[in-house]
Image (tube, rainbow, N blue to C red; front, side):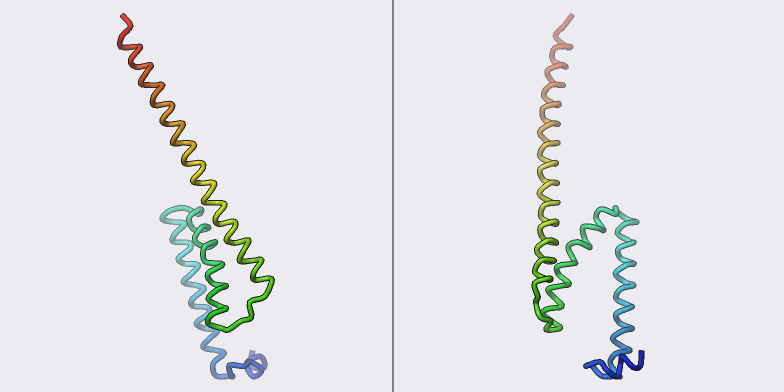
Length: 119
């Protein structure tokens, strides 16, 4: 590690603290993901992670002045496409279930009325 630290642009003194903070941040992230799974669901944890992937890419480009390459464009596009299509499917599924509940509710009310009026 000392050989890599000497070759790093940040300098030898900044590599070790940067690596330590990186480990601490990743530990907090995974602890938070496990907490989300424990208190709600793994689906919500997956959604949060999917939301964070393109945000991390954009923040890396902004703060680390990384070159925004074609691979990142494709990655960002696919991540956002998957995220939007998931929520579009959920909204469509919710509306379909809502319509089915309304239809079933009207049928059950009609059946109740017929049962009450029959001798």
